[in-house]
Image (cartoon, rainbow, N blue to C red):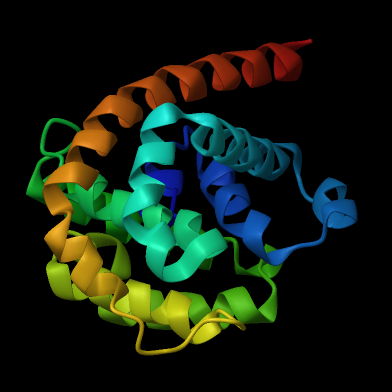
Length: 199
């Protein structure tokens, strides 16, 4: 899953911070953060492990794998944020806007824990309101291009966004088959984290 889903599947401010930090830190550094941020890192990893093993995600990867091979998972992650952002059974449009603003606020309030590359990304993310705009085709196109630009072994003009548009219905079906299972899994992980914190 990508930034919006990870932030949505957080239960505390600290978990939001940890969910973002996971992609920017070395494993050995995770224990240098407060416990609630560590919980977010743990939750991020649990989400990624569950996502990678889910049959619906395996199906979704087939949309992109002919174009990008082993990078298919990264583009599925980006695609899923489009469907999360458009899922009004989770939050209303106003609710998604409020969620996005809250995430930016939380990350800025915890700036002391953010590495410089995450701080730089946050400035861009907040300025262009990435989280809310994942609901737009152009928002996902921008994110897909970001992945292509960062991928060392992929051409920058591979028609990944066109594959997303052409297979949007298939990807949406995969999302509906997958996301409720992920929510249940995350609730269970969070319950275990809360038990650990109360011991």
